Length: 428
Image (tube, rainbow, N blue to C red; front, side, top):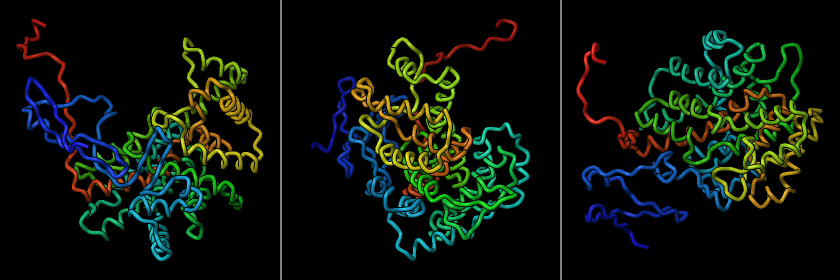
């Protein structure tokens, strides 16, 4: 393959370097294009064809349904590792040995107490506040309680900042939900594992003992692993571009939380449940809505099926479907919403229209079902997504800072007025 690409503009030719990634992804390096052509740039709305960075964290092939973290298949990680092992892998590049994992767990627990004054911020929010807005605000507020900037040239400083946020973020997640539900705020139990502690902090009632369900723990552990990173998506790119200004880790993560909030990104699993609620309100006829989904003239959209990146199947959905079946079977929840979900899933997997178009249930569909069965309010679904995505955001921020990437500064094609004279107010 040629190591350069030739671009011709107004009979002038420019040689541009071509680079190839370790998975044979090919990219034309246009970093010097504007300089060498004296002002020419590329236009790529949404950056669908633009690589913003070089990264060694996550590989995704949407055509083949492949997702790997640091070279490890997502299927194997979900089956054989727990969430903190995967977090360590994403952030530091290798799976931890027993000693490294033990220290990682211990250090995270040391930082799992949030300053009590943060409770005052939580109390100031009305119950009607959306949990993602609360979580973003609380994450940003951590900067005020931890004002020293991270020295990215110090491995110790970097490590301490990472275990600090991994310890405190689950508390913020739990407090966000407990505020919504009118429950007292809890600091958790450091005798428990990471995922077990999250569940206890979220669900423990003040007047009774909380009992962990291993099937629910396993399902949540897998969900967090499956959401841990997903290449340069909207929220991850937001974390990197915020951090490129040398903004601190916590505020960069808060920016990522805000980006994740959008219904086209992290809000997709919430949209699934809202769709199911609408179907229930209409009478619960799944066949009717499957027909509406196939009608090109009908504005109804079937949420939670297909994926804009995965063109054949979502590898995460194949993993979490089993966990969803186990949770529903074990909890025995009687819920018409979940019955509608199971009906839609069955029809989509058997209907040739959906099969031929590879419109299979995706990870958002199954995660919504699991969270609903667990008793997590629908407004909290994206918050749970953020908890899973936390190590990926940290890894991406760390990689960007260690690589000394320049500040993000996209260009534009200006389409406004050319120079025009100012009119005084009496002539406007």
